[in-house]
Length: 435
Image 1 (tube, one colour):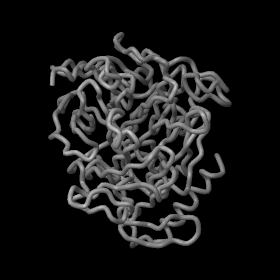
Image 2: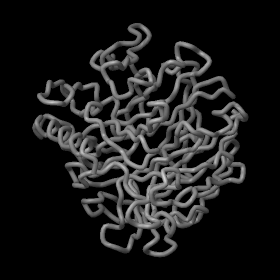
Image 3: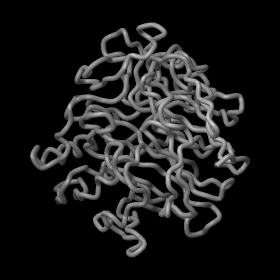
Image 4: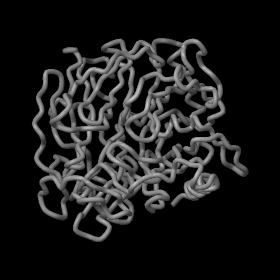
């Protein structure tokens, strides 16, 4: 475990508990999650905090993944499993992954797509179910017209291989560790990622949330959000304690190396990164960060910073509404005028589309919703369902950067989406030309 990560966790949790259990929202939670990793029934084990239906298992050790759900709507079509033993990537035998979710996708700056996943399980029949808090997969595949994403083998020591392999062959290693203790820090989950220029190369960044406890469906409580970075294409990660935003309902100055706690930290516990429109000078200079509170029922807020300042929160600006504009401190966000998308907003993915000449935003915790805007601060359009609610029940849409709609070569948008009964990720294509 990298030393700066250890320091970041220790300082953040110490700062959180210094507030006292009666003062901080971090104490709530029932230990129940909303996914079905390994088909864990009922209220879960406490450590994993999982529940849900068991799905249709190929065999007990290989998890609950069932056949690919059929969905062929007017705009969108389910194409294939990206992960799981039933996927073309056979992630169970090749990477020790029977179930996982999210698949936050970004270009590493050199044309390779990296994908960060949340809580990940392997052999469901062994003690601990080979749980990892998060993993990384890599692909050089940038053409999904064959209906699938192809992930190469993982090779120990190869920073460009399909996943991070260290001491065990065919086993994807964890990226960002966690204490793994229910009601303290049950897990660390990536919510956003981006590659930015650094020292004549590219540095990878993941914004992650430290989850204290799971609640009812769509509700969970975070300790903090923070940034981890990698200079070796995602092989190893360091967490920067200076980027930690402790989640608490009060303002409080803290001693030592921790940033002061601000109630508005709670607006950026889950995030999405986006580069500004490249042909508009004022927007092209910034990275935009959309933030939401923990869970799937909050509104979306907006920050921006120049690429070199991603770890320097003092140089961030925050949208506080048309009347006020951009402000230079998180404490100055107006609670209502600063909202860029009204609640409820779930896990977000945002990008500029040169094909549509619009910014795109995807979210959804049942079906998948699309919003568009001319500028990052909006106004954003009303949501339109591009995957209808009901069947398949999917969440966490994460756009793939090589999609024609994002490269300007067409209007097809490809994205990862997760299905909790199978607890795995599928590839979906949407023809935005039909909107």
